[in-house]
Image 1 (cartoon, rainbow, N blue to C red):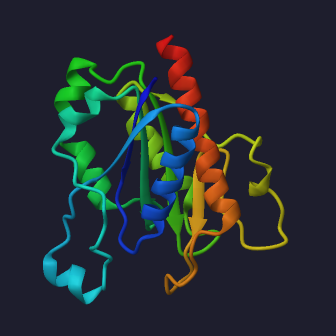
Image 2 (cartoon, helix red, strand yellow):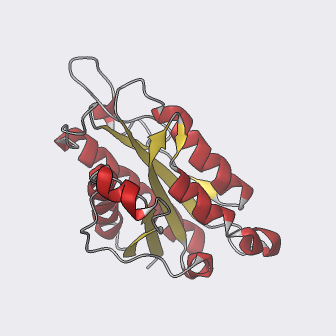
Length: 200
């Protein structure tokens, strides 16, 4: 049974919902799953003024060393001007010791994100996460086209072959829809399956 960590940062709850769905998918493949958040780095005044969502059931990760306890790490963060949010980047910036020791080599990983618009940097944000993960020696699993609901132009659709995504809308009012949550569950399941095969 692989151990899977879903590690995320969420300002308004969209990524938190996707994290829950990713975890559900991984558990459906028999994985033991934990969901943790990275620390908030924005000043409290900014958090309050921007009305960030601060109530969550998921604890903050104790530090980068925790990553070594897992067979797979699935990382989610919203986009900030076409790249991962600084809160997530700051966490990985503290993990240099793991990079130097190769402690994460061979583990499985994936990325997921949220943007305000369909063309708001989903793929570049996924790649900013994936680039970090590759530097740490992780093996990437994306959202393959077995999740066919990422295709089509009949409605607003999240999803990319590089990872599960959702579109929040400019005011954050749009929530992840059934297809986007299904994509997150699909990616979580696939990552857990690959982790199990590599561990076997």
